[in-house]
Image (cartoon, rainbow over all chains, first blue to last red; front, side):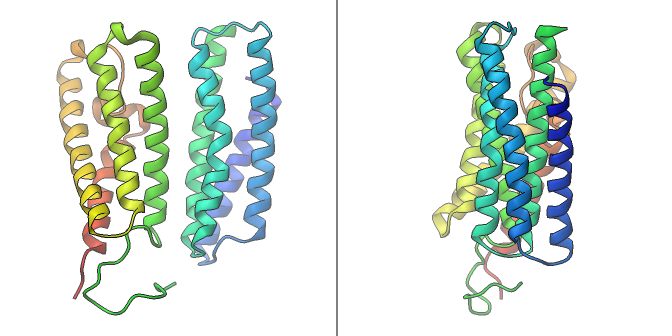
Length: 121
Length: 141
């Protein structure tokens, strides 16, 4: 979709997911490192969403524009909610909740890519 | 990590505690994606495949109810979770089977088409995990 940024988003999603699963296996509740990792991932997603939205509203034509914009919104909403839910009860499972959110967000970015390619070859 | 405040036996364990939170997270993501998808389908191109799109919407509602039921505390929420997860199981099996044998009636995919193939078959596995978790957390002792 936006080249490099999309790759960075996948790498960040994978890193956040793996770290979340790692702390579950190690029986540790989410800590500061999770917050920072999710924060960095979220920053990448926000930049990507803003750039993509600007391009859509300034002329890029997509066959399924409304679907694209909804996925864009979903892609930035999931991680803050997942982090909140994961840290509300500090058990080992918080890390897995964050991992589920990161995987879901990664899939959303992948769908965004497909929708973008459908309109731009 | 043990549950902090519950006494031994009898009292059912909260479905929203420990690994249950992972299950809720998965249900919430499915609730979000199925509802958003159905919303777009119904708003933009309902006439193309009304049955499939209504089914998408129904699936979204069922995932929302299951999420609420699992996340809430008390017997009412537990009943809601049982109902929603059972409905989900029947839905994915019926729609899955129908779409495997006769694709004609489903020109567009729903979450439950071909047992949830478009979603990595998670829709097929999820209700079994949900039922297992509800059973496991119900009154012990």
